[in-house]
Length: 461
Image (cartoon, rainbow, N blue to C red; front, side, top):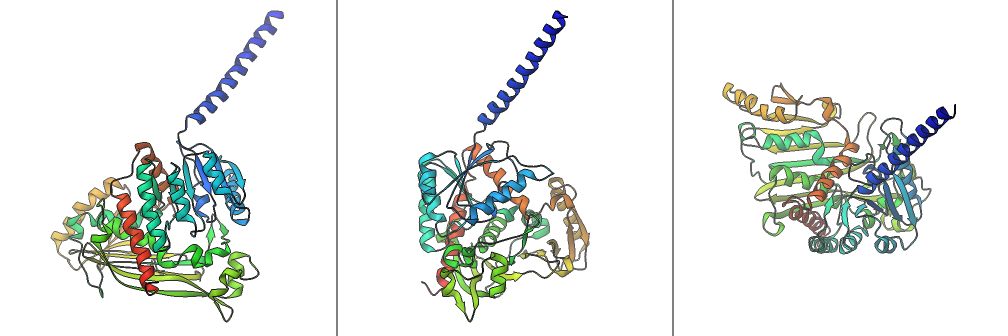
């Protein structure tokens, strides 16, 4: 009996030790993770979307520094929902500091090595510069600069990042939307696309238009926007906000992996800005605020809030005429959502993304051509095989104007999933210790264009 008890005790000790060792191993593995996030003043829901997934090289403990208020609470609530969802829950542990000195506290403590910035854009460029000056990597939501002065500071930030051997990168989710990705792939195939045309100011070779909505659903819930989102001094005008994505796609699609020099390669031709009007009840619905805050009084006329969220710019990039425009409406009609239109004109075919009623408000990519010859049709079929090798399940369907690119549902992962794709790419760059050579000059070119366009649209102010 004594021998049996001794055996049981030894086995229990072994199991206990294995459990302890397992926990120690888990802790050890956690300690090994090279990256740790610092989330600063998370006023935009994109901050939470970065944490909708876990990452192999990122510590589960996230250090949050913010001013007290509803913005940080909304961010923490979203992360908690991701942690407690039934399918593939995340396991972030949020260590939060709130106070008016949040940024100074973050810099002095340096509890992580990757700063995530997605919030009020008024101070964002300053936060970027001070973070890289302190030797911290930065992953920033767009826009990284909202005016000409911000652009000058951003240029200094890139120089400081280079000097301090840290990586500064913006979150360009639209590159990962499958129709944008495939439009770029097809433009690289001369057998299908031919050569990118030059176009004219009246008939640009590349055009991208985007329609967005102030009231929308995120992760299945109505989005509550902070009141400052409607102040262009804090959020930035439409021309320097969403337009950032469109300008990025033009560069990325037309001149892939090519470093651009904004002083030589871009010529700004014309710009236009207009306001979207919101009623007091619409403002209340999307912000939950009963009244307009004082900082918005300057934009109110006859009780209507005028938000300069719409912008259009025409320019040339390496001699190619391009046009980008963004429009914000209050709410999309039932069954619809944000929409995107894009055209790239080639000598053999046009590559067009449409997202209207005919497409059931889902983006669809088309190859449209006037060449109806058997030789061209055979060339398209042969060249498209390289796309199918890269993206299995993608196919072509003949139409009267050419072809529709049929895309397998597995590639339609939705906008929210693109944040993890950007973050994973960024983690890879951090591991390699550098960004692709063209990324920094092209970010600089992009923000020069958007901020210069705003300056021009406001009459050089």
